[in-house]
Amino acid sequence: MNSNTLNTQVRSFIESLQSEKGFAKNTCRAYSHDLEEFVLFIDGNYFSKRNQKDADSTTVDHVNSLMIRGYLAYLHKKNKKVTISRKLSAVRSFFRFLVKRGIILDNPLEQILTPKQKKTIPVYLPVDDVFRLLDSIKTDTLIGKRNRAIFETLYSSGIRISELEGLNVFDVDFKKRLIRVLGKGNKERIVPIGQKALTAIMDYRKRLKSETGIEENSDTALFLNKRLGRLTSRSVARILEKTAKECGLLIPVSPHALRHTFATHMLDAGADLRVVQELLGHESLSTTQKYTHVSVDRLMETYDKAHPRR
Image (tube, rainbow, N blue to C red; front, top):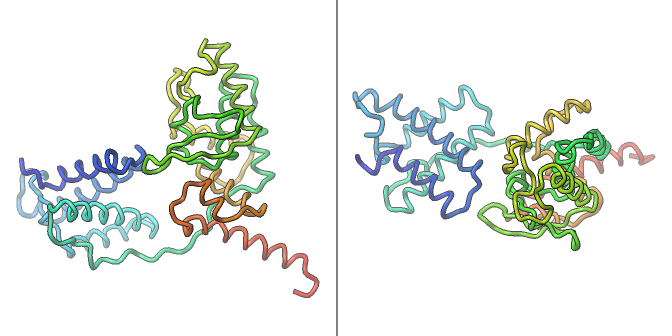
């Protein structure tokens, strides 16, 4: 079989994201899904007309800018701009990979522009709502103690859900109140964590030991599922969604919303933007700056209400 087929090279690209760039499983899964859709579109709308019996016979050098524009038109029929940008970004990264490896000479996306997006303010919770969410979690069971510890940790540290999923017991320094996380690109960083979150973690691990015999200081996954395996990001998201609904929050709450909330509350309280950048593990300051829009909006709202001659 030709090694330069779309399907073969997509698999090679996804493998490189994992092995060379250290992308998280969820990120690689998203890239894979978007590129599979792209390959199906190219095969179904262009090369099936040539009576190709096998989709795997479509090679990467068959694809040109006209086909990319056709794919963009197809996406515009059913997707929002933010989704189109994400899917196009995946295809763009894929073809850059092919050029870099010398598999193709010309990139068919060179003249293709990414759709302009509206600047959106990240979803975040007011302080009272965060406290209501956390305090609503009953801690009379092992699962309750675990869930409380998870969401206290997310709000206290601002780490990504994938970073929380990867935490082991020895990554938590209870004396120095620090946690060690492995972020994007396998980059390690040290993040402060509050005493409330640490206390919740200790309560959970003590209860875990009494019910299962797993030692508090055994270097296993920090948060476990009912089968005593590592708790996944998807499970955490489902638990949080359910908890938010049960305590009466009206806006959708995701683990990433807790990360947004952490950043917003830090900036509202006067934290330096570059410190927040470091805490969040952002490579670019511009990524962190989106949170300042929320703080400025709140500042203007306070000004309008308080100033006698506005």
